[in-house]
Image 1: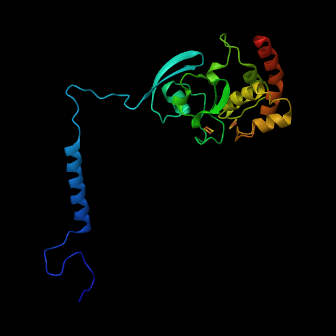
Image 2 (image 1 turned 90 degrees about the vertical axis):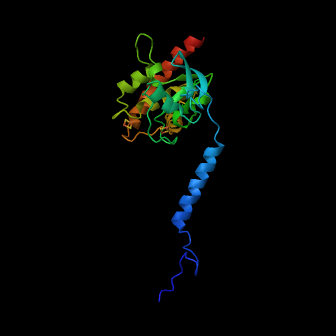
Image 3 (image 1 turned 45 degrees about the vertical axis):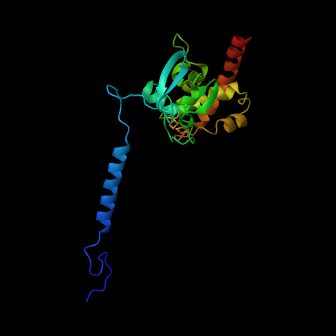
Length: 214
Ligand code: FES
Ligand code: FES
């Protein structure tokens, strides 16, 4: 004799199985939801930017008008919508610095920055720092001169962070440079060259930018 409890009532009709119960309930809910749906007006077309937020931003000197998903990161918008792939996605969690760009002159981790928050701002990426005639920025040139890279994946973020480090006044000693560049990781270990590059470019930047702002 089998005494295993079942979903069948003692002498009545077969009870609903758990599976049947779930399917029946779900189907009923579907009918109810369909019944409550608001019909779209005749002739309406789907809005391809439903939920998008209008955002005006100047990227590397060029005004852009974008319709952005509120949840999109600045890094993804730069790379996937604007084709600016210099900023790299290393960790996507604000831990490696590979995605560093400048927003209104301040360095930010673009993977942690909501693109819609840059509305009305100026964004500068590694693509926007050379001179109009193609001359490299002094920091870029110093990275080249000091072999401050190996695979190069971290380099755009390192250069953008280094420029900010100098402008913040945090590049007056090796210890300061190490401290204020510590958010930018290099898995190739090119730190010695990066330090030398910043040491060399810092006075050049101070001279040229001081003259420009004088
Ligand atoms: Fe943004 Fe690593 S990708 S900090
Ligand atoms: Fe390869 Fe820095 S040069 S990660």
